[in-house]
Length: 191
Image (cartoon, rainbow, N blue to C red):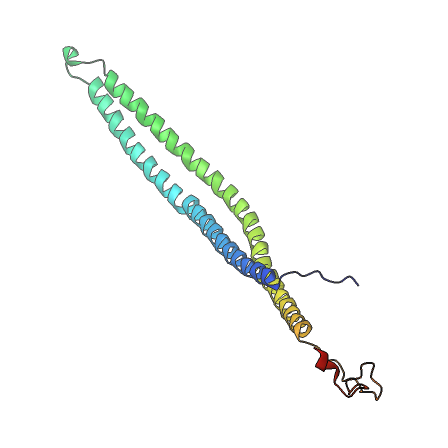
């Protein structure tokens, strides 16, 4: 079994703190994505259809007014009062174009609603899987790191404590004789 080459427990602690920060940022990002997806769904389901239905109604009203104006212009009583009615004809054409545009937009919104719901279901499934990984796997990894850091700290504490050597037995014949020498003086007296 190969030994670990851990040089700094503080670096592991810093990495763990960065992992906690990463986890928080990812959860915040997922929440923002889910909210944006919800906003898009509300927009395509409610806001767009209501807006274009309202615009179609207004365009239809303008079309009726433009037809009435053109009919009034064309029904002049005297021939000398008759105008070319070009302004009224252009207003009628613009009203028809606007109503056609609104109807096209209503149909487009219906198509995009279906597409958005399909894509939304796909994205929501992937976001749920990612959220599961973030909420389950990253805390599990952090717990494993906590255990490893704790074990390393205990190991470091044990290896740093001075080990007591067993007491050595004193023999009667020691290699250095500290007793008086032959002349009766101590060896330290010369110093």
